[in-house]
Length: 404
Length: 232
Image 1 (cartoon, rainbow over the protein chains, first blue to last red):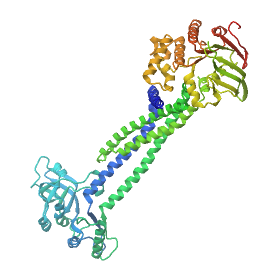
Image 2 (tube, each protein chain N blue to C red; image 1 turned 90 degrees about the horizontal axis):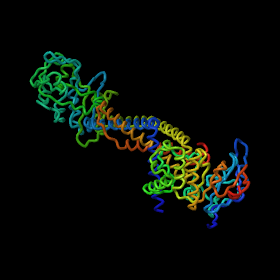
Image 3 (cartoon, each protein chain N blue to C red; image 1 turned 180 degrees about the vertical axis):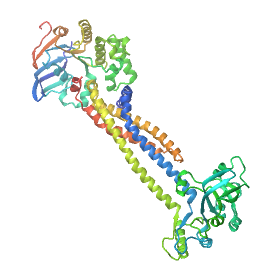
Image 4 (cartoon, chains in turn orange, brown; image 1 turned 90 degrees about the vertical axis):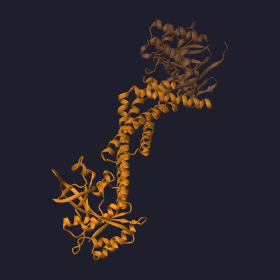
């Protein structure tokens, strides 16, 4: 019995060797055959690992922007078009709220000496914003309550702006003009956009931050239409949203559709669902390529069986049992498909690495995707190799020999 | 010489359907062979002699009749048992040697041993010994296309012998060879037979058949006469 098992292993080893000979003996034909599988696996792997890279960076950026925060945008009613600083103070006073950061946007031309930059995004924020992001100031000081209360003309500028206006110069104490109004630069900060994908959804981070009171003065408005609520630690964001909505309903006299309160986590969940649905759909389409590749292998194997009719007959005459013939052809299609699959894994990973670089997301080596690709190609090799192998094993040795 | 029966055929019939027409290829064949015999089956093409060889070699099964090989009823064996029987008992030599062109002479000779489950080292040793035996010690790593017709047929003989079969079945072994090479192959057959190996050779050539110690003639699927060379 042991001898028999050992003989089987020897036979399978011999099958692998013979199959490799056959595959390498017809290099061009073998390559064209496994190209289908290779393309299919490449597509599946590239899709899965790109999507998982994107959703991974999405998650981390939403986490950095957003856990424990709600963003509120106000459209207002005819009577009341936005939130006054007093209204904001009411929201800040709520139990679940730790603080509120108004966001007042300006878009304008910014200049320093002879350098002019148009379409710079300038945003008015408050001192609380800087207190809750203590690490963002790289140089100089943050904006504080005195700036808010007195609507001072000071600003902190992003690293990008420093590179634009003050390359090789210390920006602190310099004066820049925002829409013609002079501002004194008091600090430099690092943009925290949490990666390219997140900034796509958060509308990009501003280049210059000024006190919100100053921004409102320049805009000539008394009201704030967009702000972020920072919740106290451990607060449920849905309950907090309900509390805020209740208070704001009072402020807006129970008019409908005056404002929306959005939890970042719910945006993230929606995005994740969309992404996973999309990736499932695309992977489904890509797997059609795998089936087409499988048919290619089947076609090639059927041709091979016909071409080697004499060989099959001879082997049978020399004592090969049908099972051994079938195994040999099955191993050949399996190997062919596996080589295609492994090449596909390599090109798929390369492609998704390139895509992740283009999308500026982290490339994550997705073992699940690799296993899926390899497993799928193994399955394709066996499933589509089965019929030709069976055909070979059923050949009548006399007919097979006579065909030669 | 012991008179042990190697195989016995009783009333063997074989029918084929070719192009819709039923063909009665073998008709009531009765044949019995002793161990160590050297038999020629002589007949013109289409006489059914190749079919007879296929049945003797267990590649084909008779439509009717009884075939007992070494005391076992061939009819009752399944495909796997028949394959084992071919691998252990029978060495085939075909008309146009039927070597695999992708494999070297040695690998071709090793082929039956793979299916017999012999380990690679042992396989190589036995294949080399057998190639030496047929005078091809210096041609072991040549591909069939690099060998002459006679050398190819010698490789085929080595392949038939490597599994140490009890019977050698040759179908027109010299059909594709010139007279001189053919004579050398015949000499090799006689030598093998002197080693007490049963040899059955199928041919249409009287001169070739004459090398055997017993000749039967087959015409239209019937054995016409039997006897020794002296009778023929």
